[in-house]
Length: 120
Image (cartoon, rainbow, N blue to C red; front, top):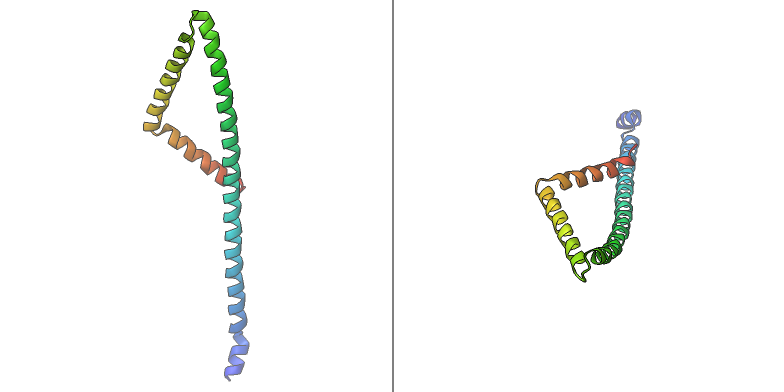
């Protein structure tokens, strides 16, 4: 009778199917997580490359602008001093924005966009 009952419900087969289903779901979750992590890493690498390029452009254009302002002011240092004050002002403006959370919210939104972009 026990044999007929277990054959009727086939618990062993059902448990194997459920175990396979759970294992497949775990594998899918791991692959999805790996894909998201690789997308984030690739995006961050690209953003760092863009940032480096932007900083190099900023350095060389600042040197050129400093020399140009030096010729306008007929001085050897005044153009660089004006640029230094300009960059100090820009740094203070950005520092006040960070304390208000503006940049933090923008970076957080950007990361959410990157993470959700591949889900569609």
